[in-house]
Length: 290
Image (cartoon, rainbow, N blue to C red):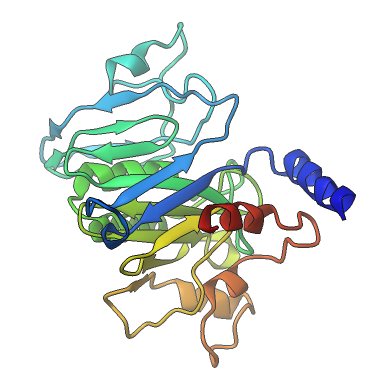
């Protein structure tokens, strides 16, 4: 038994080197001082982990915001968004994947490998997941990885709900891509009042995006460890669930759901990875919850 368990751990380490982050979101009724909490382990040895402040800015009418490609290693970007990003060692500016209309004012925030928190206390944690529906660069015209969607949410939002809706809208309208083949994303997001878990993949035929979000229940903790955790979605419960317009049509078009029974997001949208990497997700979740 011990040998089998060790073999599982070694296989997980070998096969999922880049997918080793764990995110935790805590509802304010589960903390001693009434604060919401959100965090993640960023298990990436080669990542550019500089902590960078992005200042608040006003933007001229008719401006457009560049959407940059995801890059983990140094430099994760070369741009004018912060003086630290101009330290390029002679490297050219990062070429955008596309542009979206800019808003009149964007909020200040901090970011590292992933965006962290803005001036209004909207904060993030992230973990990559397996997904049945996929798109990835450079084999797609989609140009939103969650990294950029999270930044735009921090630039524009004062609440977690706004952040969820903004990330979903960006990914649906402009298309989501994963950081590697066969992957989606999970983002934990909190404001001072509540916490949510947002989970996303590409949509049908690799286009647009399919996403859902669930509010962390009162007094609860939500742990996500490289696997989808949202299960049966209650579309009538607007207080606790948010669902993208393209989720159900994508699942129907790809033959993942018959449209008749309950929609179990984790079961329908994620492949069964237990045979390849047994307990890779559940071991970490069990350890935190125990």
